[in-house]
Image: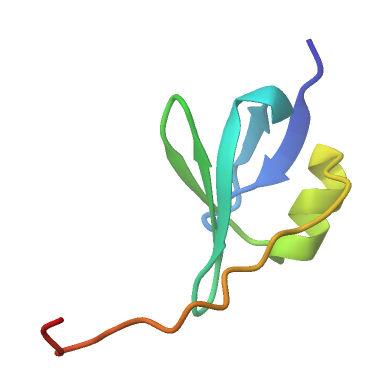
Length: 71
């Protein structure tokens, strides 16, 4: 089992198994790492986190969000 050390927004360190990461989502100030165990807010950018986790490619969702419209 491989663990990756990530720094949280409050300065603490967490260790995450890359096989358990479901999504990496960019926020306004921080990045959210969603795992099967829970959600963590970390300092680094999604590109840095993806490199640390060993992802070969990053898929970017470019679908526009529908806000306030009924389809």
